[in-house]
Image (cartoon, rainbow, N blue to C red; front, side):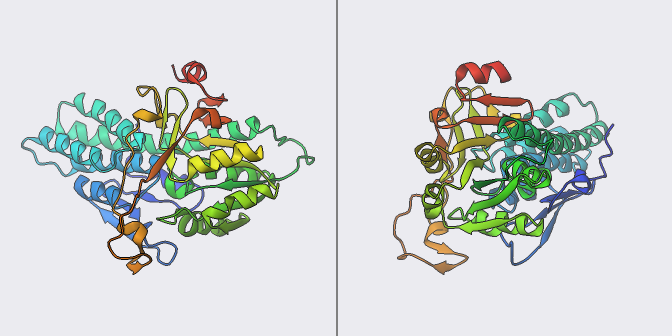
Length: 360
């Protein structure tokens, strides 16, 4: 049995996004970074759902982990009456918080299976807390495995001093802040740095929420990893200069044919990578793979309020009331992707056959 009072974050590497205390969950408010590090203590599932919706916590793996802890909190604070109805309602609220990242639904389905096997509230409290901790621990272990798979797939030697360090470009934030505590795409970058195989990271600012500016640049600088911040529109010029060898990004959902939904702007990077003959790698846990969807056309794409584009933290940047197109994600077709890396292994030049071969 897991120790459900100990947060797996204590074994994480890098700044963590969430801390579990058994009876409460703490989330680092990522909306305030890098200016302020503020932790929010949550004791109920409704509060966790609201924080997911408001982007206090973001990143597909971290969203899934937070939702799992939300279910555990619902059980801990359920009354002795119809406790099953209370937990079911909590799962419904959490599932409605964000529509695109499949990790959210994967984690909730896993918690729901455990919940349905419980005969008493005490059993549900114990087993759901243990399951949430297990999801967190598995994510951290999976991040480490992905990093090793990626470096091997990149063809970089880690056993000699002769390997030439590479420069990479990344988009959005996929590090310790977005996961259980190491990173997916940023975990690969972290491992490259640990192996002395990294020359430079170029980090897109990632409009409109500026996760690259506020989170990725901050996280990498804290960990002593060489990073240069660039405007999203500068990516083409950087690739044209010929230094970058790989674009490494995360994912919020991957379909059965290898199409990938990720932060808006990812698709354009894949097009640029193909033109400039730069490798394009997607790194995500297998929980991000949704084999029930045949292609990216089936992925629900979240759109958010236009005020996120018209202003930054309340400061107007555009005419008041101008119509805004503000999708959170775009879909990169599989034929533009060189590698999909998960903890289970690597799919090269992904297609239906390769995806089914690894994920069934």
